[in-house]
Amino acid sequence: MVARQRASLVEESDGRDVVIALEGVTKRFGARVVLAPTSLEVASGAALALVGPSGSGKSTLLRIVVGLVTPDEGTVVVAGVQLTPATATAVRRHVGYVIQEGGLFPHLTARDNVTLLARHLGWSGARLHDRVEALASLVRVETALLARFPSQLSGGERQRVGIMRALMLDPPVLLLDEPLGALDPMVRTQLRRDLKRIFSELRKTVVVVTHDIAEAAHLGDEIAVMRDGHIVQRGNLRVLSEAPAEAFVREFVDAHEAPCA
Image 1 (tube, one colour):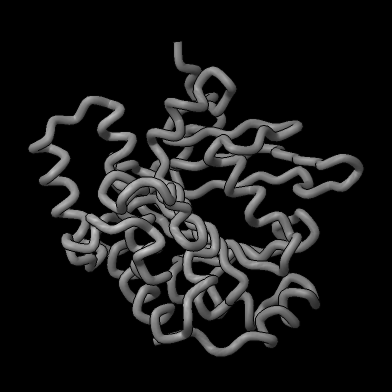
Image 2: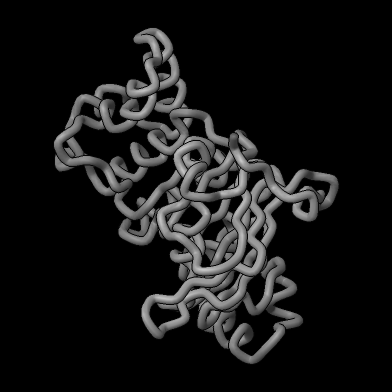
């Protein structure tokens, strides 16, 4: 039986159910503490941006939520299910996961990348076609491009296909790890705007990792600043700018450009 979250975690944030909940989660690699004891909640339909320098624990936290990294301590609850080895597969079907360059399988066409898990689950041809058409329109990909292999696509096209794949099963949770980091500035700006539109239209629960505070302010309802495995402050950009919790937050914000319109 799938383990359900503990009652202490079935709370609401601003009237919305908590969809992602971490409590006392830690992770070490050897002697190195990558994630200090961390508790975090993300409400249904909210978009949270994780920012911080390289090695601050952002990507590790995201991989813990999707079940790719097992925490040493603490509990993780996603969409009402406590993440354990026994529930990891079920949890992943509730989560769309996007990484740099889309993380596509090079030996599959873009369409086969997008539909891989749905085909494994036995979706009909008609259902697959309709879902792919809807997603291609959503992320602004020409359906003719889906017959190509990843090596035949531009960086921006691969990332859009990766977003389609993450959304194929219509998961309630979307996790994005530096989704714009490998793109040139013009493509990055276009895709950032499209991601903001997609978040608004779909109202998924979103966590996006980025190094860029301006990008975080554009994509996230809130920003969580991380340093040395700790979340040192959470709030919107105005709060981080005007009332930084520590000198590091002020320095990090000041080092980046103003948020995008």
